[in-house]
Image 1 (cartoon, rainbow, N blue to C red):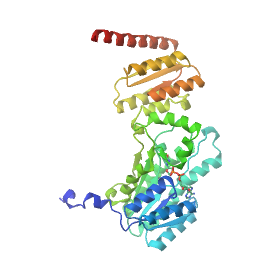
Image 2: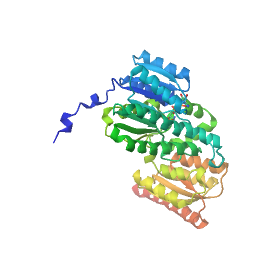
Image 3: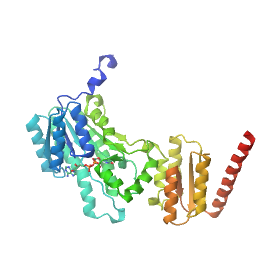
Image 4: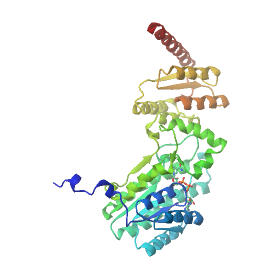
Length: 390
Ligand SMILES: NC(=O)c1ccc[n+]([C@@H]2O[C@H](COP(=O)([O-])OP(=O)(O)OC[C@H]3O[C@@H](n4cnc5c(N)ncnc54)[C@H](O)[C@@H]3O)[C@@H](O)[C@H]2O)c1
């Protein structure tokens, strides 16, 4: 039997990308620009493809300054004919294409029941249709050499339903990118083409930067942060290692996979429970929320977990939250509440998110009374413990 460890190239050699040629769509800014730089630094000749010619030119210029062989290609990737033209430009210039990074995408917020059709189509057209058009044209070129790497940018939103923003088109488009990635991987595996995706979590790009500068964005980040175990939004540089790995021979046995880079979001939840218990999902019954919460709590190994009822919309509710937070007796407390939404409710919700406490609706008065007794017991037993330890 061959000794794969001793006979393979040294690992860092396997990450080197000299002699490869890549295109990166949406390469003119944000995540795409970071991908262009990462690939260029690893030795790739890069075509920066973007709808915005000036941005593409600027990134190609930055790359040239670093000694990277780069060109800018202005193109609308939602148009299949223009995508074909990108491939002709690249093969005319370098004679080959080995790496295709299909990254251009847009987000859009709208309540599901109100999403206009043209809005839905616009998101699908760029986030999904264009990814297919690009992959098709790239693969047809790669088949000639029986080797190629296709990397699609999906999103954390393919895995979770973000909250509190509503984005049915975006979430759906990104979930489909992942399944399309798997499908293309299976179809093209025997022709040497690997197809994988990268799913970033919230990442600091112009798009997010502009949002978090607004009052609405400030409120959003307050909700997002407790759901990110690493307690920060990604920088585009956090994603660069993944694109080099997927482009290199180090990942040659990997196809149809998604690399989620989201600061631990899916492993929190708790996060799942908190997400489902958010103000945007009041219509859910308690059972799925609690099931998700228990699952998240187990995954996080938070053993001190309990479910409590509470009266919502009152100063008493906030006071209870303060008490359980101050006592730190439990890692996570799932609090059920009574009452409708309102400004006070939102305040309690936001506070609860920040201290890692989930809230849901519609619990009986009997349950509320048992909660009161529970709090009294906890406070009293803590007091007793302190007296005894003295
Ligand atoms: N920023 C995040 O938090 C985040 C999180 C998860 C996934 N993503 C995904 O990462 C990708 C890049 O996001 P970003 O934040 O860098 O976005 P961005 O808006 O900063 O950059 C997108 C780029 O795509 C270009 N573009 C738009 N329409 C195009 C078209 N029709 N043809 C060619 N180029 C076009 C834009 O000109 C722009 O340069 C997207 O697919 C996005 O959905 C972003």
